[in-house]
Picture 1 (cartoon, rainbow, N blue to C red):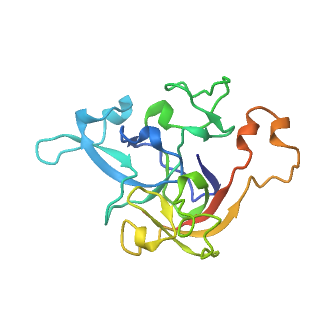
Picture 2 (picture 1 turned 60 degrees about the vertical axis):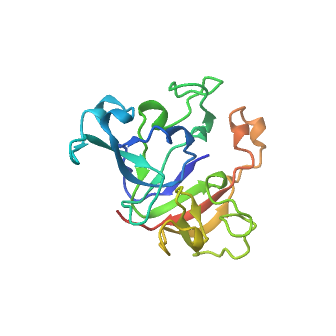
Picture 3 (picture 1 turned 180 degrees about the vertical axis):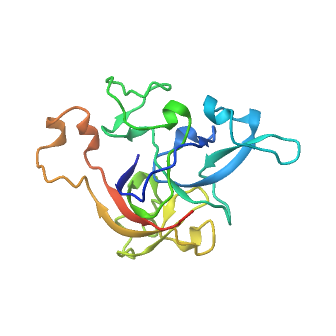
Length: 218
């Protein structure tokens, strides 16, 4: 659903193209890293395609962001993207790269649907991740039903870039990437039901998120 920026660590990085096979599946809040692809094997915006070549052997390659993690991969960052309920009004993208939802309202700051790039937060800070974008195992995952979770509990990342408190699921043995802080709802003190405010806000009803402190530095 979304990464919700609370108290970020300086500016995000938004220069790298996203891997085509993953670009439409980001929910926001995944742990990501860098990899490279053959130059002609992946679509990109003009500025990404015309710069940043690598030359391993005789094959030109280009750097891309991936949420597929492997032991030792660095840097680690949080993906600030999503295609459903994402952005400043939590609209929903329908169709291609127009960046508008079915009602014609602007979705927000989703760079993936405009340029194919993934905006990444690489500095330590406080961030919230909606609960559909984390490990959802009821007893061991980042869920409100996991009774072993406490404030300050270490969080790890799976090979798919999903945050989890289960160290056995970590892509790299015992590597702590974040700390759990709390579960939150919308944070609003307004008691008016969202559906009475606007049709778009009705989509926010029941939103829950996990507040985390991202720790890994690039």
